[in-house]
Amino acid sequence: MARRLWRSVRGRTTLGATLVVAVALLLGAFSFYGVLSASIHGSTERAAEQRLEELVSRFDGPGRRGPDQLDDDLVQLLGRDGAVRAASEEAADALGATPLPVDDDPQVVRVDGEPMVVVSEDVEGDQTLVLAVPMDEDAETLSTVATLLVIAVPALLLLVAVTTWLVTGRALRPVTRIRQEVEGITAERLDHRVPVPDTADEIHSLAVTMNGMLDRLDAAATAQRRFVSDASHELRSPLATIRQHAELAQAHPEVTSIDELAEVVSEEGLRLQGIVESLLLLARLDEGVTGSTEPVDLDDLALAEVRRLRATGLDVDGSGIRAARTIGDPRLLGQLLRNLADNAARHSNGRVAIGVEPQAAHVVLTVEDDGAGIPPEERDRIFERFVRLDEARSRDAGGSGLGLAIAHGIATAAHGAITVDTSRLGGARFTVTLPLAGPLS
Image 1: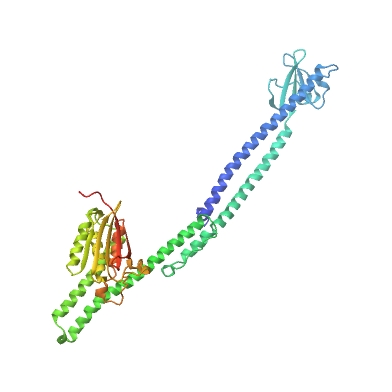
Image 2: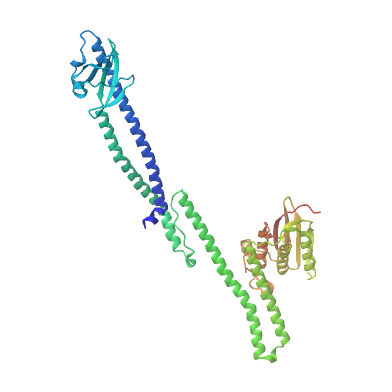
């Protein structure tokens, strides 16, 4: 449990912040102690030098007093040979005849186990006056400071750790609520959303992003359920027709014939095959399979559709077809154009127009009819799967509801777009925009 706790973001943040502050505090404490120690020692040395100057002035001046007349200072008067000529009472008791070291700079020596600062200065008669000042107050001050640092640094670290733990926990509390809410979201509860904190930080953005993802999942799940329901219904209808005719032929062979039954089975089998092939194509488009990529003469495909529709007796206007080339899969682009042409033929009153127009960086394909058109509020929905706006028509006339969805998928896979608006003929006009390939050879 403890190991897992320290592996959490809260634990790692607290540990990291505490370590960083600990390093900073230790460096600061050692630096402060070093600077303070040097400052105190420097002050003691300056005080010793000032006291030595006072003693020298007394020794050299009128009515001078020798070191043996001093009671509170540890002073020695050394001759040229370094021997002690005179000493204060305290120096005589502590050192006897042992001379203190003489140097131009202050020195630290131990006298009776206590550290002292020793300073010296030449006086008359080639003699040297040496003064030793105790450093016990310096040691006491530094000891007190060290004790305070030993207490303060851990206390500050504990305060930093507790504060970081509490602040991090408070900051991550919305994440905990988001996690708890997400844990309860299942396929049946995709309509639930995570709480969005009333802040402007990263957690707010995370909650908004999470809800956006849930919106997309909910929409995808709803579309999948509707797709499965519609697909099962579409597949069930031809199977039901085949079964009814087979049962009729079996129960009442005198009212039907093998030829009629074979015709029904063939027609419904073709319908089943068309639905299955369309579903497979849509699945491939959903997976990002775009087929081959090569230059395609879109005007040739359009002219082929014009000839095919004219053969059915429709009045087809192909005067708007210009030479234009795009990049894509010829089979898929042909499927796109055929689906739009079949849709126009199915809903027209006899007139259809197909156009291809190259522009600056795109080629625009249009398919128009003179039918009833598409209401503006339905123009986005018609590209969904198994959507038919003419539900009252027969299934043969209304189609399977997959043609426009396939056209939309092919256009998107070819880095293009498809829209619908009102035709100059009075019906619907489908406009496909595709990237323009290089110049025609």
